[in-house]
Image: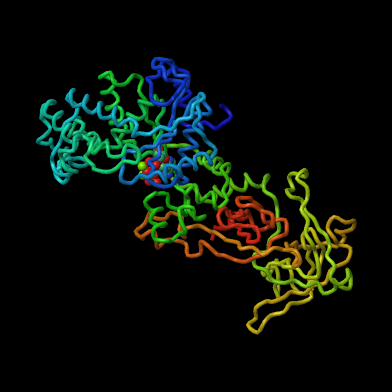
Amino acid sequence: DTTKPSNFLRQIIEHDLAAGTYASRHFAGSPGDAAHQAAGQPDPAKIRTRFPPEPNGYLHIGHAKSICLNFGLARDYGGVCHMRFDDTNPEKEDTEYVNGILDAVHWLGFGWDAFGTSHLFHASDYFDFMYRAAEYLIDAGHAYVDEQSADEMRHNRGDFGHPGTNSPFRSRTPAENLARFREMRDGLLPDGAAVLRAKIDMASPNINMRDPAIYRIRRATHHNTGDKWCIYPMYTYAHPIEDALEQITHSLCTLEFEDQRPFYDWLLDRLCEGGLLAQPHPHQYEFARLNLTYVVTSKRKLRQLVDQGHVSGWDDPRMPTLVGLRRRGYTPESIQLFCERSGVSKAGGWIDYSSLDIALRDDLDPKAARAMAVLDPVKLVITNWDELHGAGTLDDCSAPVNPHDAGRGRRSFKFGRELWIERTDYEDVPPKGYNRLYPGNKVRLKYGHVIECTGATRDAAGHLTEVQATLVPDTKSGTPGADAIKVKGVITWVGAADAVPAEVRLYDRLFAVPHPDTGDKDFLEELNPDSLKVVTGYVEPSLANAKGDDKFQFERHGYFVADRQDHAAGRPVFNRVAGMKDSWAR
Ligand code: ATP
Ligand code: MG
Ligand code: MG
């Protein structure tokens, strides 16, 4: 696809396709991929990528980046993206998260159907292979069982600029190691008593190459394999093997794994040498993780916000989780657009939250139905209404459902003696440049009539309770001569007779600072205390039929969604997704 802006990953893939780097791949027979069941068949997928979340929480906007990248590249280059659960860490994983992750990927617009098959990959499906590969490494003298304490191991690893010290267990024979490793597997050693380590180089300048642990003892029930295993592979050992077994070509990860790449290659080279895997093996490429301002995107921190009740749950509309963004009203298209626009590079950095709102507006402006809503209502009385139109009468007004698309028709609502307007649309004494209601000024009520403000009423505390105005005859929008009287201000309104009361949740940034959790402060102290304001407003009658998840542009106010959980007929609840323009620059 040459219409997409290029990036370093696209260039690598295009180079590999042109050079035929992976053209000779024959499928090795990974489980489940029906088109490839016959090992030795050429792989019909031009490239293979994967999205490999650990099912230990809900996906967030950073994961969306990885999803769009991996599924998007596979789509654009005639490849396949594997949906894989990296479930090697039994204590923290749960099927609730597995289902949440699948829902989120589907919702974002991606599936894992390839060549007529739809298969989910699990790292835990390869535990047998990983175990055999470990025995192979032991046999070949590339791995040993270390029984130093965790403290000794840490101490002997050395640190940057100081080489490590060989473990006293490093010179065991393969036969001794194999026997001991089998004892680990058979549950004869307690948790933590020993680890299997790759035997590489304790003096390597890359600390990850100083004999990394590849298996540990952990008595924990696994969500997929139950109690079959009491030893589990380490992530750094498991991940390259998962990629290789699935014939992944381009294994994309975030920059913090750059220092792991030498081990990734070392391991796969050893297993290819031993004939356990076929060349060419997958390659790892790193890109900068997505950081979004005003939120945190660490699963651990997000869990803390949920567990401590700072938000209402993983799907709280202020959360940067995909379930949260969805409930807030962000569309899958807007998130895809956002991820595409944020680009792919090696240089880290923060993407401003406003980019997400810009993408949302770009997506919804042509699509969303318009509506008028008054969020801080004060009554407006047209004092000459009865005289001009007759007591109790209502006048039909209408407006386009979407001004970009006349085909979607018009919505209608009623004008009458009493209306609701925004409290901020009236001032006793107008500030400089203020064109809305103040005594003696004329404004247009959008899609309605021109009125002239005559005064207002306040209660004893000075609180505005009512605004009065007179209607200027023959000024109704859309009628001949309506524009004869020029006014500078146009305000929105709803009719007191047909407006529908609604709960409106005005969401703002979750954190008050752009880069939370980067300074000395506890990130909880950086939460924005005003991230949610709930008001009761009035919306135009067309919204009485809104369904959960329907999205609207409330004219002047921004984009709103009927809350997926709480909105119901007769009890409307709307969430503000984003304002009409960025108002956060305070
Ligand atoms: P967290 O750091 O939030 O706990 P994680 O990296 O541990 O997330 P995984 O479930 O292991 O979460 O991630 C699945 C994939 O999503 C990985 O390939 C990972 O690199 C990618 N990913 C996670 N966070 C981001 C991010 N902020 N930007 C881009 N990709 C990300
Ligand atoms: Mg992880
Ligand atoms: Mg992480």
